[in-house]
Amino acid sequence: MLLSNDENKEFHAKIMQIQRDLNAPKNEWNNHSKYRYRTCEGILEAAKPLLAKQKLNIKIDDEITNIGNRYYVKSTVTLTDGQFEISATSLAREAEQRKGFDDAQLTGATISYARKYALNGLFAIDDSKDIDSTENHESNVNDEDEILKNFTELAMKTKTYDELKSFFRDAFKKLTGEHQKKAKQVYDIRKEELEGTN
Image (tube, rainbow, N blue to C red; front, side, top):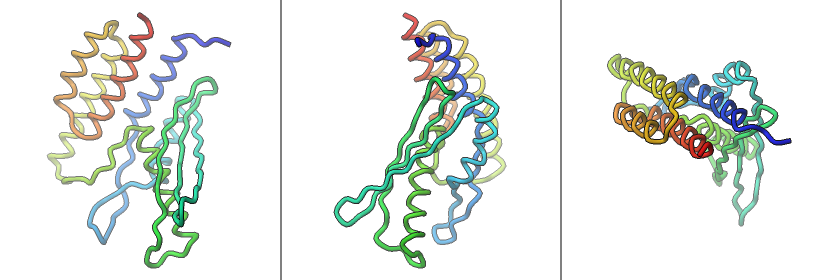
């Protein structure tokens, strides 16, 4: 069965909406290194209601491979609507040892790490350390949310690549970090759609 270009666009629009709306804060604290971080479980908890709203299913596959005397975990996260799918993959190496961890805990931590970074890739999440958490920073983030929202709406409505490029250039200059990554992903998807119509 051949699927229309409109169906493909609709699928990608759902992904972009989830990437834009997803809020997976860094709720965990690392006492040793003194920074906040997010977990695989936290990302999934934030994503599931958005996936349900868009009628998308998520699947996570893990593959464990032994290379020499080290174990590697390859995690692949796939979103599908039953017709189309999009995936992201991440690879993590199991540490030889970690204080206070037995073998099962070490493997579990490595799987969680690989899954987290596959989810980050799929949902365009920037997992760099927070520089600050001042009110001024929060205000900037809210402004950037609005800029990203406006750019996404313009990108979906634009009919030409030149228009898209202009909107993207303007928005990208006003964004930072995770917001820039999300804008670039919206741009890439819409560019591909526009090129497919020519």
